[in-house]
Length: 470
Figure 1 (tube, rainbow, N blue to C red):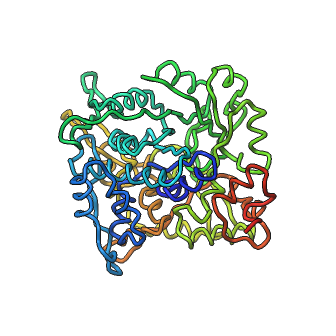
Figure 2 (figure 1 turned 30 degrees about the vertical axis):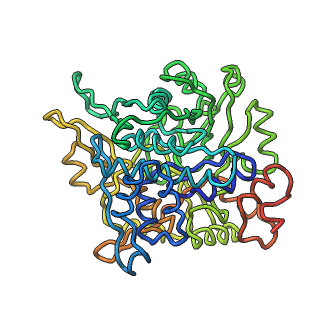
């Protein structure tokens, strides 16, 4: 559920209610840095950092970012380094500590199951992030937006305290150009690293073909799959044979994009279904298709424990009640090139107007792509950066038209928007599954606030509506 939405509070509440709670691993280094700069009012981040196994590393992160009492009004957040294929020691330490803290807090005070989700598309921070989560004892890793064949092998090596590496995805590659992403746990411990439990691995797929590819080619064990339909929020797999056309026209999915559940069951691994299964009867429907269970995002995204700002939650619930809420599968918004679900909070063009006024800048860089320069170096570019910069790096203008800055938009969703020097404040860019439009149908009469436990009770059939017991 996007950066920081499925946070440690939500994952812990879900796990305590008896289901697997999953934290989002996207941009946790940035989330951690901004929470500390906002003063860590409830002390949770400092409590987790106090439990980090290498105190001097946690202390360095605190020294760089913690502001007692928080930032002064009107003061922008302090920048943190963008992570490239050769990150600085400071960047690596922040990644490890931030992922440790989120998982440690999610696991605090119960013995339920906690997972973490990453995007294969966001490669550069992955291995240090995985290591931080494993240090905190994460039970399950889920991963989509790519073909993460190397991840099981990486986790095995990290569990043994060994150096791990993966090939870096690079566009425009010559035959002898083979850069890698490397991480050695000893850089955190200053010596031998401990052995750790190895989490279960559940890649996210949209087809039986991809599931078979991962089972054959993964460098280690695949323990099952999460199967997402095009109705799920966030990034969607593109339709078969899709070519991007009119930016105002949603991609069309057809029979070729449906998953053959019988063929998936025949692979012999458990799977969970995602994408509009978060409703009464959804769990039974999934089980009848052969699934072990369901993955639910939309209903949890707007509950009390999620990381979305309270004002955004209220706006979404109010618009759903009015019947004016709409979800648009935007073919061009995401710099990744994947279709991306955008929740339209305004029935007019106001949402688009604010993005039209936004200066094009890429200063967080999670969705950048690596490319080989003419002189054989690795450089980075993003179709959301200024057109002139993108084109100078070999990008085509048409590939940058209509792109939005997901990185800054997702941080604004959490109530952590960057304030620019000219006074411009980064706007939110909210995502959700198609079920957002039906949110009011799930809520009990007059319910505008509800908890993760309410959602679990509803999905189990213990309550007719979400929040009806409030």
